[in-house]
Length: 324
Image 1 (spheres, rainbow, N blue to C red):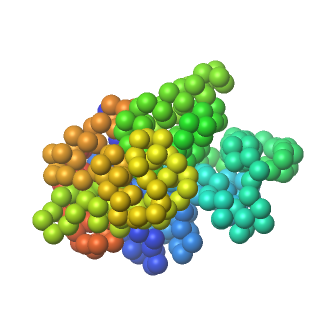
Image 2: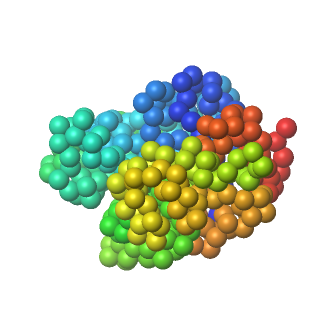
Protein backbone atom coordinates (compact mmCIF):
# COMPACT_ATOMS: atom_id res chain seq x y z
CA UNK A 1 0.00 0.00 0.00
CA UNK A 2 1.34 3.41 -0.94
CA UNK A 3 2.03 6.11 1.61
CA UNK A 4 0.32 9.48 1.19
CA UNK A 5 2.12 12.76 1.77
CA UNK A 6 1.39 16.48 1.51
CA UNK A 7 3.02 19.15 -0.61
CA UNK A 8 3.19 22.76 0.53
CA UNK A 9 1.04 24.25 -2.27
CA UNK A 10 2.75 27.65 -2.51
CA UNK A 11 6.14 29.31 -2.07
CA UNK A 12 6.25 30.56 1.53
CA UNK A 13 7.19 34.17 2.14
CA UNK A 14 7.18 33.78 5.92
CA UNK A 15 8.39 30.68 7.68
CA UNK A 16 5.28 30.45 9.88
CA UNK A 17 3.18 29.82 6.75
CA UNK A 18 4.66 26.30 6.69
CA UNK A 19 3.34 25.39 10.13
CA UNK A 20 -0.28 24.42 9.27
CA UNK A 21 0.99 21.90 6.73
CA UNK A 22 3.62 20.52 9.07
CA UNK A 23 0.91 20.19 11.72
CA UNK A 24 -1.34 18.38 9.26
CA UNK A 25 1.39 15.81 8.62
CA UNK A 26 2.24 15.40 12.30
CA UNK A 27 -1.37 15.06 13.48
CA UNK A 28 -2.64 12.73 10.77
CA UNK A 29 -1.42 9.53 9.16
CA UNK A 30 0.20 11.48 6.32
CA UNK A 31 3.73 10.27 5.73
CA UNK A 32 5.82 13.36 4.97
CA UNK A 33 5.80 17.04 4.06
CA UNK A 34 7.23 17.99 0.66
CA UNK A 35 8.33 21.20 -0.99
CA UNK A 36 9.89 22.01 -4.33
CA UNK A 37 12.74 24.41 -4.93
CA UNK A 38 12.06 27.93 -3.71
CA UNK A 39 14.05 31.14 -3.94
CA UNK A 40 12.20 33.02 -1.20
CA UNK A 41 12.43 30.91 1.96
CA UNK A 42 14.86 28.15 1.17
CA UNK A 43 13.19 24.74 1.76
CA UNK A 44 15.88 23.30 4.07
CA UNK A 45 15.54 26.32 6.36
CA UNK A 46 11.75 26.24 6.26
CA UNK A 47 11.64 22.62 7.43
CA UNK A 48 14.09 23.38 10.24
CA UNK A 49 11.92 26.32 11.30
CA UNK A 50 8.91 24.01 11.52
CA UNK A 51 10.92 21.56 13.64
CA UNK A 52 11.93 24.39 15.96
CA UNK A 53 8.26 25.31 16.31
CA UNK A 54 7.50 21.75 17.46
CA UNK A 55 6.55 20.04 14.20
CA UNK A 56 9.26 17.48 13.47
CA UNK A 57 8.11 15.61 10.38
CA UNK A 58 9.80 13.64 7.60
CA UNK A 59 10.73 16.00 4.78
CA UNK A 60 10.85 15.64 1.01
CA UNK A 61 12.76 18.03 -1.24
CA UNK A 62 11.27 17.58 -4.66
CA UNK A 63 13.46 18.77 -6.26
CA UNK A 64 16.33 21.13 -5.40
CA UNK A 65 18.22 22.47 -8.39
CA UNK A 66 21.83 21.49 -8.91
CA UNK A 67 23.16 24.85 -10.25
CA UNK A 68 22.36 26.48 -6.90
CA UNK A 69 24.96 24.58 -4.87
CA UNK A 70 28.07 22.45 -5.02
CA UNK A 71 27.53 18.77 -4.09
CA UNK A 72 29.42 19.33 -0.83
CA UNK A 73 27.02 22.11 0.14
CA UNK A 74 24.09 19.95 -0.95
CA UNK A 75 25.23 17.05 1.25
CA UNK A 76 25.90 19.41 4.16
CA UNK A 77 22.47 21.04 3.87
CA UNK A 78 20.50 17.82 3.71
CA UNK A 79 22.39 16.18 6.55
CA UNK A 80 21.93 19.33 8.64
CA UNK A 81 18.20 19.14 7.95
CA UNK A 82 18.00 15.50 9.01
CA UNK A 83 20.02 16.16 12.18
CA UNK A 84 18.02 19.27 13.10
CA UNK A 85 14.62 17.65 12.64
CA UNK A 86 15.54 14.15 13.81
CA UNK A 87 13.46 12.79 10.91
CA UNK A 88 14.20 11.10 7.56
CA UNK A 89 14.74 13.27 4.49
CA UNK A 90 14.37 12.64 0.77
CA UNK A 91 16.97 14.82 -0.95
CA UNK A 92 15.67 15.21 -4.49
CA UNK A 93 17.87 16.76 -7.16
CA UNK A 94 17.42 17.93 -10.72
CA UNK A 95 19.35 20.06 -13.21
CA UNK A 96 16.61 22.63 -13.68
CA UNK A 97 15.57 24.22 -16.98
CA UNK A 98 18.23 24.94 -19.59
CA UNK A 99 17.66 28.69 -19.16
CA UNK A 100 18.28 28.34 -15.41
CA UNK A 101 21.54 26.48 -16.00
CA UNK A 102 22.71 29.13 -18.44
CA UNK A 103 21.78 31.97 -16.08
CA UNK A 104 23.72 30.59 -13.11
CA UNK A 105 26.51 28.60 -14.74
CA UNK A 106 27.04 30.57 -17.92
CA UNK A 107 26.17 27.56 -20.07
CA UNK A 108 23.97 24.49 -20.06
CA UNK A 109 25.21 21.11 -18.97
CA UNK A 110 26.42 19.54 -22.26
CA UNK A 111 25.04 16.23 -20.97
CA UNK A 112 22.15 16.51 -18.56
CA UNK A 113 22.38 12.86 -17.52
CA UNK A 114 26.15 12.99 -17.20
CA UNK A 115 26.01 16.02 -14.93
CA UNK A 116 23.34 14.43 -12.75
CA UNK A 117 25.26 11.18 -12.44
CA UNK A 118 28.41 12.95 -11.23
CA UNK A 119 26.50 15.26 -8.89
CA UNK A 120 24.51 12.47 -7.22
CA UNK A 121 27.59 10.25 -7.00
CA UNK A 122 29.42 12.99 -5.09
CA UNK A 123 26.49 13.72 -2.74
CA UNK A 124 25.97 10.03 -1.97
CA UNK A 125 29.66 9.46 -1.27
CA UNK A 126 29.86 12.47 1.03
CA UNK A 127 26.82 11.30 3.00
CA UNK A 128 28.31 7.81 3.26
CA UNK A 129 31.40 9.17 5.05
CA UNK A 130 35.07 9.03 4.25
CA UNK A 131 37.13 11.10 1.85
CA UNK A 132 35.59 11.78 -1.56
CA UNK A 133 37.97 12.36 -4.46
CA UNK A 134 36.08 13.02 -7.67
CA UNK A 135 37.45 14.78 -10.72
CA UNK A 136 34.70 14.58 -13.28
CA UNK A 137 33.62 16.60 -16.28
CA UNK A 138 31.04 18.48 -14.21
CA UNK A 139 31.96 17.94 -10.57
CA UNK A 140 35.24 18.32 -8.72
CA UNK A 141 35.20 17.37 -5.06
CA UNK A 142 37.99 16.39 -2.70
CA UNK A 143 36.87 16.35 0.92
CA UNK A 144 34.64 14.77 3.52
CA UNK A 145 31.88 15.68 5.92
CA UNK A 146 32.75 15.45 9.61
CA UNK A 147 31.48 12.10 10.94
CA UNK A 148 28.00 12.30 12.46
CA UNK A 149 24.92 10.17 13.03
CA UNK A 150 21.75 11.33 11.33
CA UNK A 151 18.33 9.94 10.41
CA UNK A 152 17.98 8.20 7.05
CA UNK A 153 18.65 10.30 3.97
CA UNK A 154 17.44 9.07 0.58
CA UNK A 155 18.81 10.45 -2.68
CA UNK A 156 16.06 11.28 -5.16
CA UNK A 157 15.98 12.33 -8.80
CA UNK A 158 13.27 14.25 -10.58
CA UNK A 159 12.08 11.89 -13.32
CA UNK A 160 9.94 12.73 -16.35
CA UNK A 161 11.22 10.65 -19.23
CA UNK A 162 12.75 7.28 -19.98
CA UNK A 163 16.42 8.36 -19.98
CA UNK A 164 16.22 9.97 -16.57
CA UNK A 165 14.26 7.01 -15.27
CA UNK A 166 17.00 4.61 -16.37
CA UNK A 167 19.59 6.79 -14.63
CA UNK A 168 17.46 6.95 -11.48
CA UNK A 169 17.31 3.16 -11.54
CA UNK A 170 21.09 3.13 -11.51
CA UNK A 171 21.92 5.79 -8.91
CA UNK A 172 18.87 6.94 -6.91
CA UNK A 173 16.89 5.74 -3.92
CA UNK A 174 13.72 7.58 -4.99
CA UNK A 175 12.33 8.52 -8.41
CA UNK A 176 10.23 11.68 -8.05
CA UNK A 177 7.61 12.36 -10.73
CA UNK A 178 5.47 15.45 -11.30
CA UNK A 179 2.43 15.86 -13.55
CA UNK A 180 2.94 12.28 -14.72
CA UNK A 181 -0.21 10.25 -15.53
CA UNK A 182 -0.58 6.87 -13.84
CA UNK A 183 -0.65 5.02 -17.16
CA UNK A 184 2.60 6.65 -18.30
CA UNK A 185 4.13 5.85 -14.94
CA UNK A 186 3.23 2.17 -15.33
CA UNK A 187 4.14 1.80 -18.99
CA UNK A 188 7.22 4.03 -19.32
CA UNK A 189 8.76 5.17 -16.05
CA UNK A 190 8.59 2.03 -13.93
CA UNK A 191 9.97 -0.30 -16.66
CA UNK A 192 12.85 2.14 -17.30
CA UNK A 193 13.60 2.32 -13.58
CA UNK A 194 13.70 -1.47 -13.48
CA UNK A 195 15.93 -1.58 -16.54
CA UNK A 196 18.43 0.84 -15.01
CA UNK A 197 18.49 -0.99 -11.70
CA UNK A 198 19.05 -4.36 -13.34
CA UNK A 199 21.97 -2.95 -15.33
CA UNK A 200 23.68 -2.05 -12.05
CA UNK A 201 22.63 -5.18 -10.20
CA UNK A 202 20.80 -3.17 -7.55
CA UNK A 203 17.30 -2.90 -6.18
CA UNK A 204 15.30 -0.27 -8.02
CA UNK A 205 14.35 3.03 -6.37
CA UNK A 206 10.94 3.58 -4.89
CA UNK A 207 8.59 5.94 -6.72
CA UNK A 208 7.23 9.16 -5.20
CA UNK A 209 4.55 10.66 -7.45
CA UNK A 210 3.54 14.28 -7.00
CA UNK A 211 -0.05 14.42 -8.19
CA UNK A 212 -1.84 17.74 -8.83
CA UNK A 213 -5.55 17.48 -8.08
CA UNK A 214 -8.68 19.26 -6.93
CA UNK A 215 -12.12 18.23 -5.76
CA UNK A 216 -14.98 19.11 -8.09
CA UNK A 217 -17.11 22.04 -6.95
CA UNK A 218 -19.97 23.93 -8.66
CA UNK A 219 -17.94 27.16 -8.66
CA UNK A 220 -14.81 25.80 -10.36
CA UNK A 221 -13.75 23.94 -13.48
CA UNK A 222 -10.96 21.34 -13.81
CA UNK A 223 -9.25 23.35 -16.57
CA UNK A 224 -9.10 26.47 -14.39
CA UNK A 225 -7.68 24.44 -11.52
CA UNK A 226 -5.09 22.79 -13.78
CA UNK A 227 -3.97 26.15 -15.18
CA UNK A 228 -3.68 27.63 -11.68
CA UNK A 229 -1.69 24.61 -10.57
CA UNK A 230 0.67 23.96 -13.46
CA UNK A 231 0.71 26.85 -15.94
CA UNK A 232 4.50 27.21 -15.81
CA UNK A 233 5.08 23.48 -16.13
CA UNK A 234 2.79 23.29 -19.14
CA UNK A 235 4.96 25.93 -20.83
CA UNK A 236 8.25 24.15 -20.14
CA UNK A 237 9.64 22.14 -23.08
CA UNK A 238 10.66 19.10 -21.01
CA UNK A 239 7.18 18.82 -19.47
CA UNK A 240 5.54 19.29 -22.85
CA UNK A 241 7.70 16.52 -24.28
CA UNK A 242 6.78 14.18 -21.43
CA UNK A 243 3.07 14.89 -21.79
CA UNK A 244 3.21 14.33 -25.54
CA UNK A 245 5.00 11.03 -24.95
CA UNK A 246 2.12 10.20 -22.60
CA UNK A 247 -0.32 10.76 -25.47
CA UNK A 248 -1.51 14.32 -24.79
CA UNK A 249 -1.83 17.00 -27.46
CA UNK A 250 0.16 19.72 -25.68
CA UNK A 251 1.46 22.49 -27.94
CA UNK A 252 2.60 25.31 -25.65
CA UNK A 253 0.58 27.80 -27.72
CA UNK A 254 -2.81 27.66 -25.98
CA UNK A 255 -2.64 27.45 -22.15
CA UNK A 256 -6.32 26.54 -21.76
CA UNK A 257 -6.13 23.81 -24.39
CA UNK A 258 -2.96 22.42 -22.82
CA UNK A 259 -4.59 22.42 -19.39
CA UNK A 260 -7.60 20.60 -20.83
CA UNK A 261 -5.29 18.03 -22.40
CA UNK A 262 -3.63 17.51 -19.00
CA UNK A 263 -7.02 16.97 -17.36
CA UNK A 264 -8.30 14.66 -20.09
CA UNK A 265 -5.03 12.70 -20.09
CA UNK A 266 -4.96 12.12 -16.33
CA UNK A 267 -2.00 14.37 -15.55
CA UNK A 268 -4.28 16.58 -13.43
CA UNK A 269 -6.99 14.83 -11.41
CA UNK A 270 -10.44 16.25 -10.74
CA UNK A 271 -13.64 14.74 -9.42
CA UNK A 272 -15.63 13.94 -6.32
CA UNK A 273 -13.93 12.51 -3.26
CA UNK A 274 -14.64 8.89 -4.18
CA UNK A 275 -13.49 9.51 -7.74
CA UNK A 276 -10.22 11.06 -6.61
CA UNK A 277 -9.55 8.22 -4.21
CA UNK A 278 -10.08 5.75 -7.05
CA UNK A 279 -7.82 7.73 -9.39
CA UNK A 280 -5.09 7.91 -6.76
CA UNK A 281 -5.32 4.16 -6.25
CA UNK A 282 -4.43 3.87 -9.95
CA UNK A 283 -1.07 5.39 -9.06
CA UNK A 284 -0.57 2.69 -6.45
CA UNK A 285 -1.36 0.05 -9.06
CA UNK A 286 1.04 1.75 -11.49
CA UNK A 287 3.92 1.36 -9.05
CA UNK A 288 3.92 4.50 -6.89
CA UNK A 289 5.18 3.84 -3.35
CA UNK A 290 4.43 7.36 -2.12
CA UNK A 291 1.81 9.75 -3.48
CA UNK A 292 2.16 13.44 -2.70
CA UNK A 293 -1.08 15.44 -2.75
CA UNK A 294 -0.51 18.71 -4.63
CA UNK A 295 -3.36 21.21 -4.22
CA UNK A 296 -1.53 24.22 -5.66
CA UNK A 297 -4.44 25.08 -7.95
CA UNK A 298 -6.90 25.10 -5.08
CA UNK A 299 -4.61 27.30 -3.00
CA UNK A 300 -4.09 29.77 -5.84
CA UNK A 301 -7.80 30.10 -6.65
CA UNK A 302 -9.69 29.29 -3.45
CA UNK A 303 -7.15 30.08 -0.73
CA UNK A 304 -5.70 28.41 2.33
CA UNK A 305 -8.90 27.53 4.19
CA UNK A 306 -10.34 25.59 1.27
CA UNK A 307 -6.99 23.93 0.62
CA UNK A 308 -6.72 22.68 4.18
CA UNK A 309 -10.32 21.43 4.15
CA UNK A 310 -9.71 19.44 0.96
CA UNK A 311 -6.44 18.00 2.27
CA UNK A 312 -8.23 16.86 5.43
CA UNK A 313 -11.00 15.25 3.38
CA UNK A 314 -8.55 13.48 1.09
CA UNK A 315 -6.32 12.25 3.90
CA UNK A 316 -9.33 11.08 5.88
CA UNK A 317 -10.53 9.03 2.91
CA UNK A 318 -7.08 7.73 1.99
CA UNK A 319 -5.37 6.99 5.30
CA UNK A 320 -8.09 7.46 7.90
CA UNK A 321 -8.19 9.61 10.99
CA UNK A 322 -9.40 13.16 11.50
CA UNK A 323 -7.84 16.56 11.96
CA UNK A 324 -9.60 19.13 14.13
